[in-house]
Length: 405
Image (cartoon, rainbow, N blue to C red; front, side, top):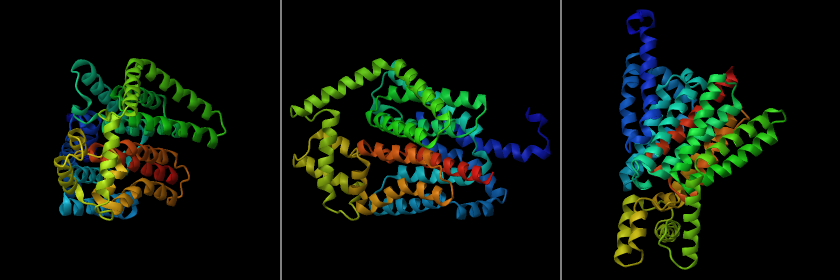
């Protein structure tokens, strides 16, 4: 096949190939690699070189000036870099922001369409489902020792379920595209439940109810009933497949709640509550700008030496306080929390300013991430950074294209 490529289509073929490389990595190996964002940066090198050699920099700069989402990511890169240099902000979040910025600005706008998305999400879902099956059945591994911790892994899955459900509901897809998307949703739900991550599962349940109510209220045609039937069928199938896993997790949760009532805070939920209390005590030291990651570690070490916290709380809190809002308050103070809230709210403002009133998908993605941050800190993991900003970028780009068409 390669021998049949003539000079007239040689350049377009290479461009498509180079653009596809990072998306192939995202769809297949990204979840299997704890440093997936580093490999993504490497996968972006061919399209970056191609862009520089093809004198596309001027057009990409114009796109940057017209794209508020890219501008926000660029500002975040600057702020996180300053935080990293000042008091030890996580370099993983910085790498994730740089990777998704390059991915969005280097990828031609025409590449963001529903057909490409249906293929991407199908392979992503298959890869994610295979990962959970492998680590829960073939080589049984503690959820915290997965290549990507089970909680941020499940957060990514939830984001993809919401995005794909929105694509199925909103866009006019071919039969093949619908089949790929619905198959992907089923595989993603199975992977989510198999991860046994309570926070993302509860967050998705909440957003799903709101999503269905949104369909019922805003759509008076028969389409709303079809959407409800399809979503209900997909959920029932996935739940039936994973009933034992759900029962086990519910039983463990109820057991932990009973232990807390008895004064035992050694379980997962009890440790989280202890970390919240500890985080609030640390936050009071520097409420405006925070004390940074290094400052948190030093304070936790001191609290452990004074027997103010248990070794379990010390070990887990050094990773994250398991509440995104509290983490930002402690690390970067009120200023950091305000910046994070801007990340959640700005996509809604951007799409509204573009004159598109249909903000359902963007609102669902932002709400899901906001709820997930109540019980965890997704952005401590670069994979979550990449997926959130990429999916929001896809929404904004496709909505603008549809409006133009």
